[in-house]
Length: 274
Image (cartoon, rainbow, N blue to C red):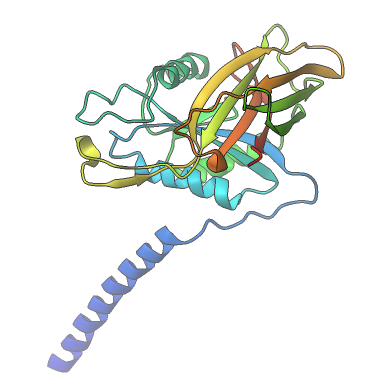
């Protein structure tokens, strides 16, 4: 009886340790690639509203980075935009990547998507679905659905330094697809930077080293797209890059978004020449 009891106890202990090891391995494992059908990859914009002052945000930051790096969802070309809001800055740590423009954009989504409340981490896929940003299954499902819709072609070509030492991006947007009648399609450009991190000294994440996905350094509206013709928008856009940004880690993203519905009709991205 004593031997049997000892074996049972040892077996239980082994089971507990085995479960702990499995959980740790699963958490660190790469995302599993969904089966893709032949054809070009379809751009899907995945935005994450986050903050270094929010203790529940780091897992969402890691998920966004992993989604963009591994591209695991079917034929989707995941374009990541990590946007740091500023309303957490009163909690003991001022997020160096935060901006009021990110907060304003998140509030606009609250009205359009019927959520009404700003929270972090919040993920928004193609301007049409929102959910807690650390929910991998929900993210995969929303990205898969977004990649199945008709998209407007957006072509970007980045050139080297112009006369003022600034790179230039040539933008061409094709005929609008899946547009909402009566809405106003707008052309937006974001400049993102990867490889950013912080040693947090205060707030909920005090003592943590936080690493980020593609942080939005700049977001601006370029103009309106015409809802007619084979080319709905074209431009040559000079880029003003801050001297503190690492050019090798920067990327330019252009997307078409309806003003009222916030639906993203198409997107494209390009790295900048060295």
